Length: 131
Image 1 (tube, rainbow, N blue to C red):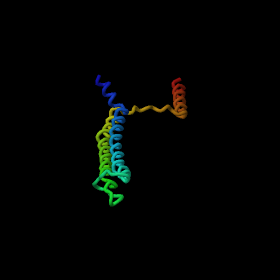
Image 2 (cartoon, rainbow, N blue to C red; image 1 turned 90 degrees about the vertical axis):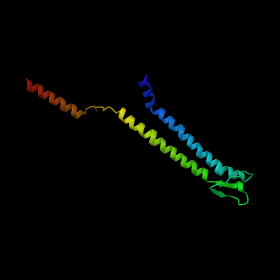
Image 3 (tube, rainbow, N blue to C red; image 1 turned 120 degrees about the horizontal axis):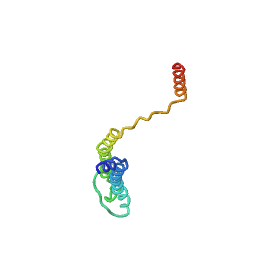
Image 4 (cartoon, helix red, strand yellow; image 1 turned 120 degrees about the vertical axis):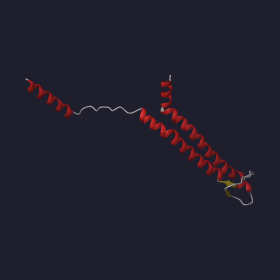
């Protein structure tokens, strides 16, 4: 039973899927921040949503045209941090574990024609020497 569970966890698909979900969530945060920080103020040119923080204002008289860069930078930093943690905590150890547990078996290459002819010659020479 534990062997089956270990085989399930060692499948690359499970880890890849988990990483994809977390990375997708982090990327969604970036997209949401870009939308809230840049698209909403551009839309606010038509009517009011007040935002304050790190950024700049498109129209000085209208606070609702403030482009907030803080949430975008925060989401970018969050994305990089999440990606680094996933890589160094999950991916790197899993790859190391796979390389230790699933050592590739050495596949002996088929002999070349020259090697086969040399072997035949040596066998024939041995047979004639034994007679």
